[in-house]
Image 1 (cartoon, helix red, strand yellow):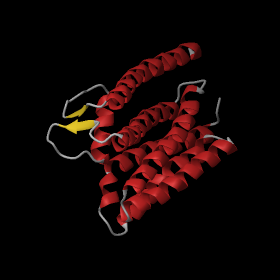
Image 2: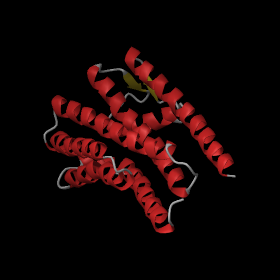
Image 3: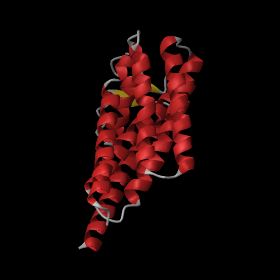
Length: 217
């Protein structure tokens, strides 16, 4: 059993991570406003998973990998904001995918490696769900970059990163509004995988939490 000060610190770390993820998802348009805002946004984005990794795990290699991918995201993000090009867009997609993969490993180990159900585990599980959604947004954006026209909006508007985040969460939660449609083969494959993964995650997480609660009782 963790001492109260340690448990409290972990709760605070997970709560701040969850808040940071929500802020990131809501403030992405700042990356395209010009001036100092893109730099501030990407500095924030490139630090949230790094700080969380150092707070939640003691694995030196994992810390190094997440820190390296965070630095790469920052550089790619600045390039894409201040000197946009196809190669800069590709760089931000690839580095974001790597960055999210590191965060997923950290949060999955923390969430599913827990022996008891505590507030910090519930916060970590929620953050993991959101990170999976934003990670798929980067992956689906990469699919659109490789095969333009893989996704079509019913309004006819071009699909940017913010719309892809929206579409990813709609898919993850299986809402399926239908305003954005995957029409390409690879797009449909990855979207199907995300929808199935989102459903399985909920089922597996609930089973895990119920099992931990029952064993504790």
